Length: 352
Image (cartoon, rainbow, N blue to C red):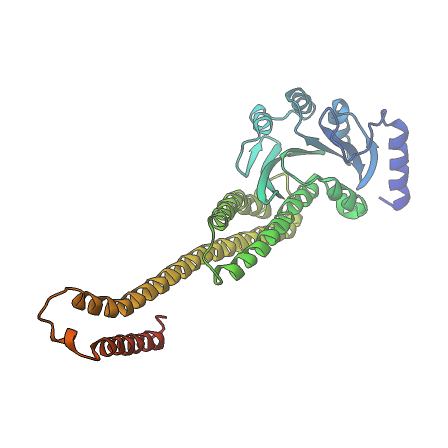
């Protein structure tokens, strides 16, 4: 099809399009619909109500892209009726407590991915459920997640890429989800470096240990959210899914590589946190040992005058030293010399 024919098709579609709903906004619409648009050869030609989405999707060379944010069950039932979605998949999208997976229901593909954001120093998790079929793709977001508005706006500037169809949009969303793991990991990496700098200087306080434990637990949860995506992307990459064309295999292979990179980074951060905790314990034990050595050294030094004072404090009459003219000074001299020698030896050995 020539450029002029595409322009003619787009113009004709616009003239016959139903009343358009507002374009995607930054705030959350009351009905849960973030965006509902129709694309022809990669060009957005109309914004449509969900109740007409099925009719548009059945037209040749038309792709309906709907974005929902925590929709009500009634809205999901409407979407189900428009695209004849499987009830089990719709139930999963309603409950939003699923692990990442890929399932095929007849002619439709159902993909679940976990999203993550850093909120008040903790990783907050969300879910994205994606329905893909001939002529349509529906994304349903729950919980913490970055808006896909930027994905839509970016690829609308590249109609050639967007014209590849609904499977390309699936790639774009999954790639965006995986890329958004990195800012979370980078923020945690910076905090881990600060912990490493402090851990060798002094033992960790209770608050530091609690924070370290929270980070390790959040990283474990993130790893559990990321790991199943490898299998999902591999299935999309291997060409075993009818809804995804083999020509898009390199793109899903790239997403798989990104997921594995995220996995490796998570594992390395968890190991560093484990080493930091162990190092903190060693530093604490070393300081406790040093304190013990100091106490033992001073106890040994003080034992000399204590012993001599105890001997001459027994008040026996037959103690020859009591009659010596310079006995007192001799005992003081012995005490000073002995304590000085002990102090020098302990100092030399690093105990004081």
